[in-house]
Amino acid sequence: MINLDGLEGFDSLDDINKELQKRANAHNKRGLRAFEGLLPLQMQGLQYDFPKGENPLVMNKLSEEELKNCLLLLQVRFLIDMMKGGKQIKLTKTGTLPTKLVKEIYDFGYLKNYMIENGISKLQKESDAIEISITHLWLEMSTLAKKRNGKLSLTKKGENHASNGNFILNEILTVLLYKFNWAYYDGYESENIGKVNPGFSLFLLKNYGNEKRSAHFYAKKYFKAFPYLKQEADKCFRCYATRTFERYFKFMGFVHVEKKAILSPAEIKKTEFFDRLFSLESH
Image (cartoon, rainbow, N blue to C red; front, side):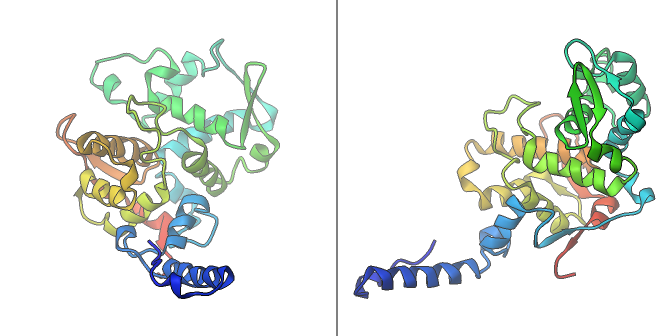
């Protein structure tokens, strides 16, 4: 909070405004403990300008071989390759990928679904596996593809960058950070947990992910930075862990996730792919 003490000693509103601006500038140049030492302006950059702006976390370009460690990217690129040269994918009446294509993507084995792998459910359609549904959804929400008259095809930008893995990854990450509703696949009440400043979650992972840690370790730091999001601790922690680590960061290939029981906190460790993709600004 900006210190408001002593303002009664100023004679004019103009002098007060100048002093407030001076104090605000000083406040913004001071790292905050709740923000892991980051400046308020750096936190703002992570929320609104990452990964394009000046941020404490920098996104690097990787080789095509290194990009193969992003499993969701592999699935997205498979769909993109199908649409190169003006080709289209005919969707079902409900706007989803056809069953044959859904099973073909799943059989690659890039991302596996717990319910399907354990025989609890069967893969009959796109919505049966979040791992397939989100591949289609994020591609459609990006600037790379469009849906018209029940068919999915590449945009001009998609055609131009169809073979550029780094560009596609940047597009998909932008969808996750800024366009996608993080609450879409769960029943948690809050739509903002995890969605608010996921760049800060990436920053935390970069700093602490060398060791295997409980997802609750990251949740505590996240809610310390954004206490207004915290309601019931256990439920909020599970919401954050599920969305951030067990789903979206895992799908992107950013984390290794170990979970002993359904309700137990997951154990999180960053992947080598994540470490190569992101660097700290000072490094």
